[in-house]
Amino acid sequence: MALIDGVVTRKLRLIPDERGFLMEMFRSDWPEYEQFGQVYITAVYPGVVKGWHYHRKQDDHFVCVSGMAKVVLYDDREGSPTRGAINEFFIGERNPMLVKIPKGVYHGFKGIGEELTLIVNVPTELYNYEDPDEFRLPAHTDQIPYDWARKDG
Image: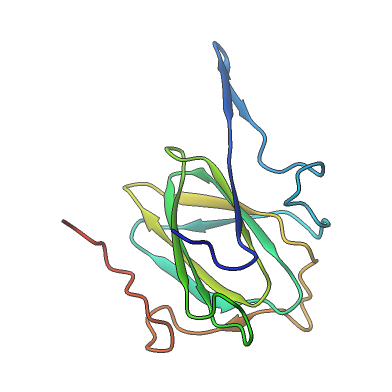
């Protein structure tokens, strides 16, 4: 899959021992790092879609720390060399990965599997309660050419 312009992924490494495991999710010496705004966790129930939205000021950095998520990106940015492209990532316990989502790219995610899905996000900006940097569309809209349904086959 060709990545949307500005999207970066990094395969994450679990370091197991007899006590459990450790996994670095995001480091300031990685090239994906720009600046720190805040860290938060978002949860989605099995089969539920949270989407679509984009930001004008911030990049997001998603890591799914529990369960599995289908994270989908859509590039509708004017002048982008990948305008119209869709990226689909399956991230979580069975595929630990960091996904950097650049500003201006629509994104959403769906909990896949049987348990609650937890995603940690490290955005580059603080959330502004008075003037949120979020521009939303419904999860199921004709404005984005994507169907959230499971693709059997």
